[in-house]
Length: 287
Length: 299
Image 1 (cartoon, rainbow over the protein chains, first blue to last red):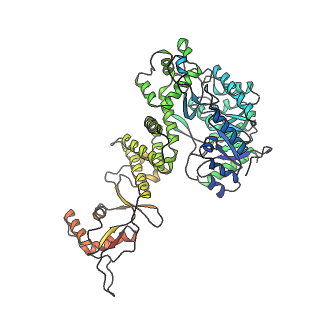
Image 2: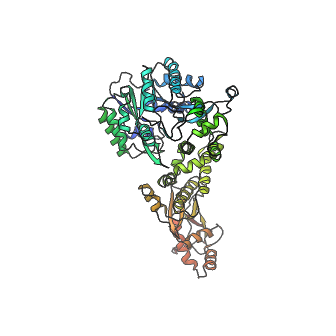
Image 3: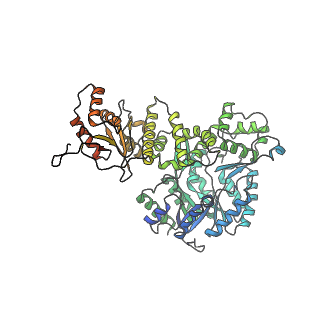
């Protein structure tokens, strides 16, 4: 088995697990330092972990609903721990988002308690309010106590304003980090750019307001504009503005990992452009 | 910073009291879990009714939530990218991807309630929906429909049962041509090569000019490589192939062609024409009168 070296000092470069990742490892030996794998995939198809015979795994999670008001099932948290132990992941990446929520209606809270919570298949940006901030802090602490590796929170893409929000995601993130010393970040630069486009803020300027020194991992992926909105697109390569944001962020950030999320396309992408992007990131992080 | 603000998020007074985190999350989640609800709320004038729930629904940008539900549904169809790459690319190039999947979201949610759908059911459901969604007279939609028709034909042939090709007997007027392998005829508005090159190069699908009289395409699966191939054929050749039923002799086919076209059709020349299909392993001949030893074979 291959494990991520916890004492590694160089920034590692990896890719999100995809249908073609095994072929990629054969075609480009040594090009990747690790594969980032979703906990949900391991839980659903444990055999996927076999790839760890060839390359270390980093665990990524979308099930802990850190940004929500309804906790995950205990069995989910136990399964995360199982896979943390098995993969020996150096950290657990999780979204600053929710995937469970209480039932909508009726307005009567007592009657609502009897209703099953709503579970989603995709993480959603939370309301960015004082109430949410306190909830996320409350959610984080027991998780940080439970797992012996850091939990790093990933910024969600913002596709629409969430009613009741009173602060920006940058402000929300800053205040989370101020209040929780153990919290580190997974900064998805494509998500950040998408939010900037959709909400109309200056990505480069706002990037500087983030606590970049807390960034442990960066995510890079493609994006596309459809129906007047910018959307995440893991089937396309990261565009130039994403690399510009990475270059800017690296003036302060010292990440341990940079992950390409090219995991929606079913087939291996063109190797030449992919190798160029891998080289470009290695040059930027100085490895 | 005011990025959190927006028309839909501008709330104050009593309405704002209802916009607690748990309740806002609850309504957004309800809409995403059952996208049909978003349509219901929208049809009700953006109101979710009376009480706090109504105030929350009023505050949500329902059009944006509907698009997000479409995006989520699109991501859940990622397995279809292998089967319908051209169709999905064409939808994206036409800026229709999110719109289509937003409309598809309630259907897909209903279908998925019984559990996960395998690839075949996903494909059948989405292809049927998209075919109905595309307008018959819209030239951009026609391009997408052509891409869909092409890719569905290829996929069907990939999995079709086909009689294996066997070395043909001599092509002869009394021989009986039989189709081998898996094949299909399709009248398209655009040749898939033109369509593919235009879409794959990032060109706008609006730049693909629809042909009034599109090509007749012959698809067949090479039983050796299992690859599905496509070539353009004349309408007459397509008609000829459609007449091949495994019982009619070449002479029978010549008579039927003559009747259909009003032109004389020589069975000997038809044998030669059919021979071209045997070269593609599309046809074989059976039941032919054996050629005398030493006599050269026809065709």
